[in-house]
Image (cartoon, rainbow, N blue to C red; front, side):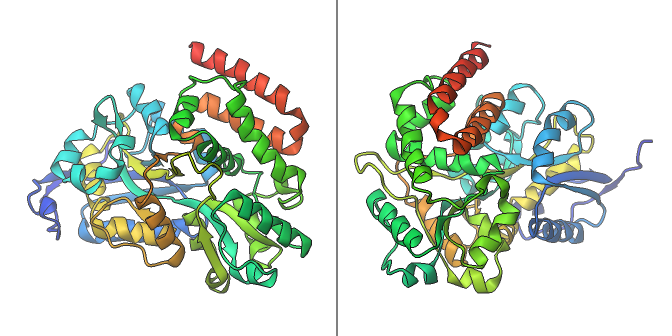
Length: 413
């Protein structure tokens, strides 16, 4: 049944862009977003603020778990999608834009001043010269670590080199503390390890060529990435039974002091108990080869409008609202991420602050993340192979041969 709509003037906003806005059709706005744990409350707060400013819009919001969300995304976009969806920038966004499933937001970027306020993330929001997403927050990736456990075993400072990092792992293990927690049941957490080994050993340009399918997985440079990783597995520096843990179930190991470190995005800090968060430090992935320019993972979370959205007028109102410095900053604060809007307040959370300065000082390139820089079919096969490698690293050669055969099959298309 078609819902009634009525003409109303836009509510006056503090942003000049809103003040100049013209009347729009208002009605029901359907929104579906991915959320885990405390993320839902942060989303809801922002939607409540929009509702206060736009009482004529009836919001219908659906929250879906992250893994289920990824599986259903293609079906939503191709059939009967909501008006707004949360998603990711880079190849993940471009994949759907290329297929004509996303609405072009280039005019919104121009109208709302986003070319200036989102300048640093414009490239990852762009496909074929047009913008298809509204950036929300950026995750910096690095090592969370228990400062008290470092002190307990005599580690005086955060490691900056790979040699120092390995020495610290050795001290922690000798004291009966698992040096590194990894929730390997969530394959994407292993992808973070692959990204950083590749970025630190081979550099950003090589990494992007690999993500684009232009380099063979049997290339010796790819094997060096896995061999560096294998050293940590062979030395048993990771927690036992890592493949049984996902992100939500790994926290108790850090909270209870059973593990000392974990490579993860800054968003993880938002879900930690305050007492544990106060004991947490954060440092960038150590340098392995000093001759390689330092690059980082900095994936951008976004909102998109499906091409088949029914209420595009109100969807654009919501996007404009979510793109303001105030709301962009509130979302980032609630999620433990970094605001994408350069007019938003700098994060005050200590871990987010380190992540903010890490990304802002990075000159060697910022990657979007393994499964956001690569075509989905190859990324899925690659992450599955990472779990197989983690389970049995002696199978490395056969795993790389399988990945190379997969690369040839996928990119031949």
